[in-house]
Image (cartoon, rainbow, N blue to C red; front, side, top):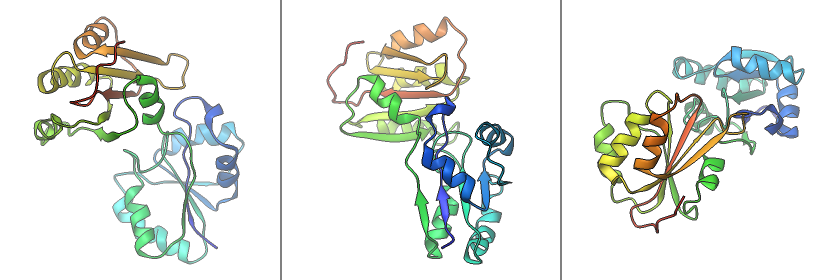
Length: 229
């Protein structure tokens, strides 16, 4: 039966892809990719030659219903993002919801998601946590931070390397400079780095170097016990 497969792809090391993910990508009729150039590199590495179609946040509102119609006509799709699991701070949610609304079978494969290794590596409590993804860049940013000041669970954020220092400075303002934080970047890549300490200590560290790569910030909750770095 035709369906939509949601397929996680490696967040860095190609060796992190699952055997099942490779099998699905080889079997489907069409692969929907956030950026076809990025996905082409992955597919070429694993000798996958299936049809590749662009599906990203700028066109998903226009294409979701069309894709559902094609699935209903017998075409099977796989949805991938540039890295990690689609719909987790990446395009995918709208298509999945549209499929659900139209009783389309969906199968999400388990696989790479950046915040899980960052959370485990942080040393902060991970029995209860909340995933915040990317904070609003401008409108609504301070309101969201205010809402989180009393959050007792460990908090997880995604951030651009260009905004890392600014975000940590805001965390210091809203949560206190002694709050424990862990910053992970380039997870599973050659230059993977996990930096832990108080917000002040981590700001001082990154002020001394040029930051590159994808960033995951894990922040201690309001009532959690201090975790020494």
